Image 1 (tube, one colour):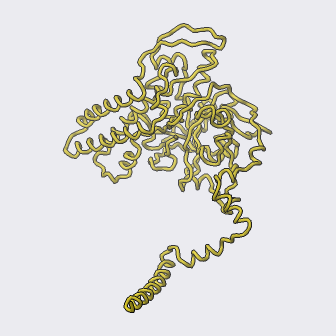
Image 2 (cartoon, rainbow, N blue to C red):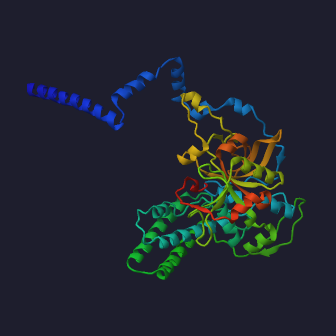
Length: 469
């Protein structure tokens, strides 16, 4: 027993010596020290105010506590100019916002041309082909990078994103140009097109397996023609999976509709390409992607590598401009009754339940006594914010010659927001809107001239690559 006590005392001496040594080392190494922790403890004063805040925060949803009530009562839902749109669409549990938004800016054209109250495209039809094209693009990219190491940054990027739902405006253009469009009734939604999680995981696993096979074939000396022949077999299996999940996409269909007076049209037969050219008839190449990305110089043309859904189409190309110009061109289009596709970071400073996007809608700083503010440039550079969602501008409220707020058509169903719409405060536009797509006719010659310049190519790991979900 005496031996045990002596040993314990000896160990205690060693422990005290070790702690003292460790503390000296941690100060030098920049680690968290006991002295620092003691300072933190002493700085937190548990007075009546902090006790009340702590009691509230530990038992409640902080966003509800931080909600700025004055913001909720300080606005109205009226707009000086509003574009007439159809029923709200619903992408459900899928990342097809970019596609829904793309088709939604075309719906007013069809409704006006057919003189009908309601019209919705099939989102499932182009999504089927988007998935097929993305699978092909992934496998083709694997073939092109077959000699690179698996730790190569480009190869790693490909393997992390083999089969995403997300996309951009150029994805919409490529799909419609190649495959056309069909009305919603011709290829309706399926359980899997509206809920893509499991399918994406399974197909991603299959594609990664296929990538391993193609790389192994290359290592054994097989050349590109043999690899592409094997790729074709692999894509046949992907088509099989997609057809089981979505149904078989039509090559031709018969369709008729009712106009707003209830008159029934004649039944006509179309291919999806004919339907687009005869009924929609919009030149999608007249639309230009404009970004506000303060991490890169303004008034320059940029292109993001690998930001496309088809192997033989161009990557996303955009003009980077200042936010005031971005808003001016958006306003010009809306006032001409042309809705605007746009990409934003919808999860930041937003109350989707009430349908409000406003920078001061939550007072987190007042609750925690901490400054959380970052500039737009800092949010991008330090990965705090990227475009996560695409929607459509369908209205603007102008007072004293300046926009006060913007009306947004979302694709989360009529129960989300204010009957499916969101109200965006103009300051929120400044902070979290990154991209708009504008028809060339609303852009000045100085901006259009930039389209003829050589684009600066950005890598796929640039923060602005982030696919819209």
